[in-house]
Image (cartoon, rainbow, N blue to C red; front, top):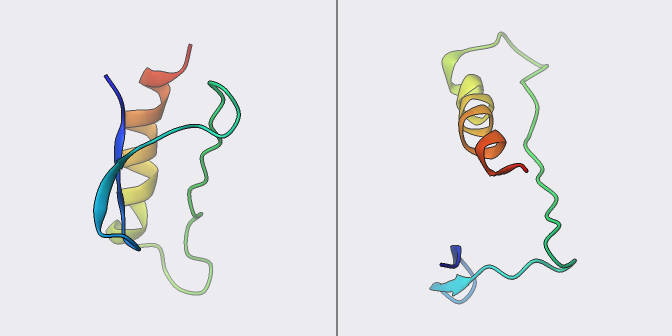
Length: 57
């Protein structure tokens, strides 16, 4: 089973192939610092905390 990602440039789903063997880096933006924190800012933190730890060894 492979991970498919949507390439917005080609507008097609493509297989995700890590550049460095089985090691993948993940970046998630931090919270807003220029205004009050709101529920929209929490979404990336919630998605990250739910999805990523299950895939860690």
